[in-house]
Image (cartoon, rainbow, N blue to C red):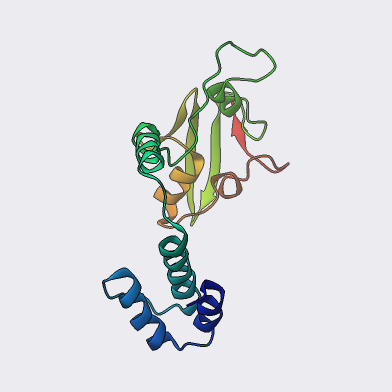
Length: 164
């Protein structure tokens, strides 16, 4: 049968008929129900049978390339090779947040009739004997739910209360 006629006939078959044809061509059944995929796979196999498959040499080379390939699911993390003076270090950028007073200052906040005091440290925030990494963590410890620490303590606004 002419290959072009056979490929045209595949388009008119139902999914069940395509699955039967797949089993005939590949020698094993399939659980696939996607008509377009079945047509492509059967057409590929029919063409390979009619015109010849890859040579043994080409198969070996493809296998060698696959074995030598490094599989990488995510791009490598880039590390700077030299210090760039125009880019501040991450810790320096966090410490230089303009919304916060300098380390050593105390933020005061009246919450549910209680005066809360948070001391700003060089790395973190001290509240009731514990050190927290962020103002949001302090606010969560106080309120029991997540909220923005800068908003909770009114940092960066004109009515902020901080004592040096």
